[in-house]
Image (cartoon, rainbow, N blue to C red; front, side, top):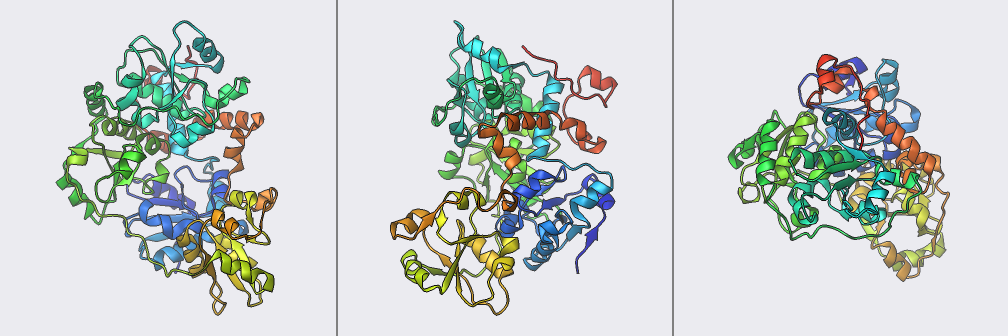
Length: 542
């Protein structure tokens, strides 16, 4: 039997100090248009694949929601039932979804990574983070003493577009790499990202660590640069040297952690936490993905420090959980933890990090029966007979780019709608066999012929001669519920989309209610100590 919650009850739960996993189970495009501030995106199409990582403790308090309208296919109720089926014991549904939340007088938010982006705006105000505009930076780069520009995003984002001369150094690496990237203490440093948050947090990280260089955030990042008609680079691969760290800021990082009350915990303590049925613990390796791939502690997840701050909902789905951070240098983990504490998280640093010998239980993934497979050349032979149909479960964007001619596109919540009544063999196309297996397990009509999964990749399909086509407008935009146009259009040469995005980002703080704002633990400015309701004026600049 489904347990329903009223919006008022859920609101009290979100601020009662207990752990809670608030899961928005709509597809990503639907989530990004309008969701709760603490909502963690976990689309129904990826539910079983990701829930064990995001919510590892099956006795945790879980609330799922959708829009409450027919456009989301009752995925909240369907997800709740599926979560119970795979072992979660304390699952509830927000009755009426986002529609009821809004009707109750609570705020809905657009976009993604809401807590971190809102935190960035508040941090800029609390610290008075110095910033430069795109035009100011352009002039500085032409001066006799140009700044070093460091891009605080991961390499894959940096390659898409970057400021000319910039070097990729994700925020989580700054404390460990900056001294190798700047020639002396007098050279100005400008930190940028695509928009605002990582520019602000990256610059303030260096300031909090006490670097002597003049440090600035680039206002509005690459979007601000683009809006000023300044040229961006595309495909650049300039980055820090992965094998060149620096411990000069080790003492400063430890002092910073102490300043914000970051606990240091022994491996034995974390092992005891792992068996605590009343609390959830996440073990986070904040080093680079390459370092993680080369070897990490058992049971840890790769959570590069900068991205852990920027997109925490991709790494932990339980509000109020313990976050245990570690590295192998003693610099990166305490620096990241100092910010997580200010964001209101229970973050600790593992003593001795990689050398601690900690063995942590890995997140458990529920099991599902694998689908039978069909090889590309076998499908090629069957297509002319009309005895087979192809259903593509990849992203709508990838489907538009290239897919098997005649294939239909679908997404898990809507599979049943597209199945034809005849008994043709359905062949599924998917990037992840598990996604296809779970979709078939829950959505396939009883008694229908079980689907097969096409093996290989798109290159394999083309090699054997499977006919391929592109359909730039199919599926239609309204059907692409897995794609958030609001976020992505700003990087596609659409200036108006970029302006709207930046206006959205700077307007986030004004939408917070009291409990949401009080959950952050930033230092107060003198003005705020007199009036805690004052909003940021963002007047500080170079």
